[in-house]
Image (tube, rainbow, N blue to C red; front, side):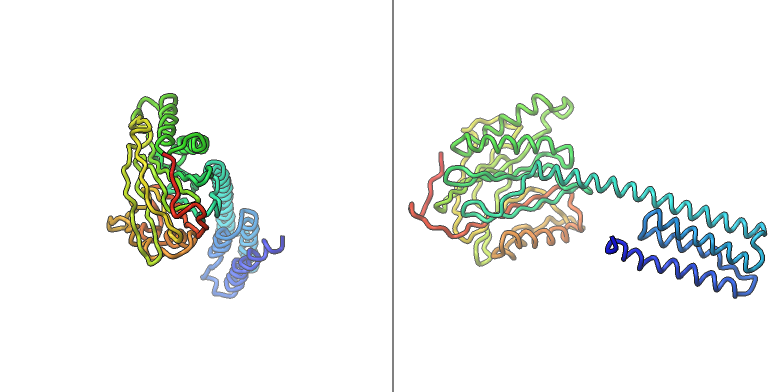
Length: 371
């Protein structure tokens, strides 16, 4: 308790000293000089660091000091002095009222943040630091003020002999996109274990999104709800990984030596647009070697602009930290992206960094992906 009060006690000395100084000076200056009205500064300063109670106490001290000045000068009962005391009391009460309003809004904001944090943990389960031979880090930057989640999403799940990863972006941002993001995440976590190949998994997600739209999409938004998604499958053994894109940008592949490549990608339309079957989705393969880092992202990253309207040079900046750990890489990118965008993003942005640790290869140099 003492630890939480000590800073306020230290700052409280400022308005108290002001009241004492103004009172003493006002008593000894010539009669035609009146410094008493300056006492309102004390409760005004207190409101900047204290709550309504302390502000009210300082306001009462200021009113008492004004009365004491009038008593010492023999003008306490004069009309002018009574008006000054009443004005000081009224202004102090007004300051206390604004303190009450501020504290109420602060509590409401704290509740909103608490709910957003709880929703984030329910919707976006924290990714494990390590899964199989992979080391993983993730980062979410919400565009909505005071929000922690929106329409961007990511998830990982273990399958036999490997790991599947999803990163996606639901159209829109903020609370309006959370329901669709939750639907897509739930569908992925269930379907990822039921389909042997990524094209079939993408088709299953397409069906889930289409059913949701048929049941819940407002008529005025028909055809405007969709989600981009990138599915990856990374085997535990071998260097050949696969990915299937539903309108989502290709990841960056960071190799030691600050080398950055973009794996070849043949994207299908976003989920909820094409209604494509498994044959409409392409499995693209690429080499993901030991020591490489795969950097997944949403379009809020590459579409961030600076004051001059220039897009964020994502690949160029990521190359600077190609040899960093996943956690350090995302920490650098977060600071650099926000600096480029002036501290505020126009759209939600998400990153997932996946680093492949060295492992033994008893089955040969390459692993096979399901068709």
